[in-house]
Length: 260
Image: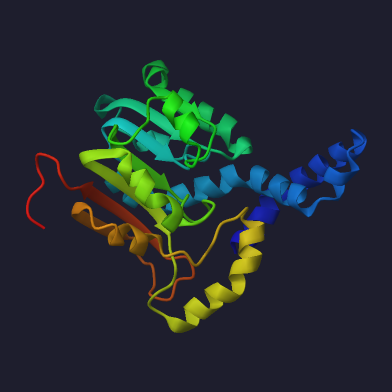
């Protein structure tokens, strides 16, 4: 279904993009399946994210309205989460998005919140693994009140095992990690098998996204939490091929932290 929607919204723009490479005498880009894939994904992503946002509105509101203080959103995409933030509670929002075609949409989404919100927001067009880019904006261990992970652990190079612990180090004690991810199928063996079969094609079409990553399990195994709340999408079946989870985890060590 998702691939069909990607092609429906992105195929024609991607074809014109490939033809532009030919007109500009760039035959290698014209013949590259990766360039074509990026064209389809770049053109279709804003529409797909808007549809996803409408489907998960209530869960996103439950999750994101609690973000406050200094906030880093990883995988901000085209900015479909921006409207959920409580402007009065945010001191500064850093929106991290490495996928270049999404950045202009993200900038417009922030601008749509008004000048006051725009002044307290910064777009960082880099990945979470770029320590230098984060440091330039004062993002260092123990500096964040909230870390928002938006459908990024599924595609981050090396997987959540390689990056999640370091990401959580950026959050101060008593701060929160707010996670929105699709995860590996762990409840239905047949659906899990289908995930594994489809994953190679999915990885290519969805620009590196993996269906089989157990991001929630990796988060829980960090064992640094005062509390963890998990919400699943209403109506989601136990055999879903892309099971979605929304997680609000409070890091231990703050003033409110108690015995585990």
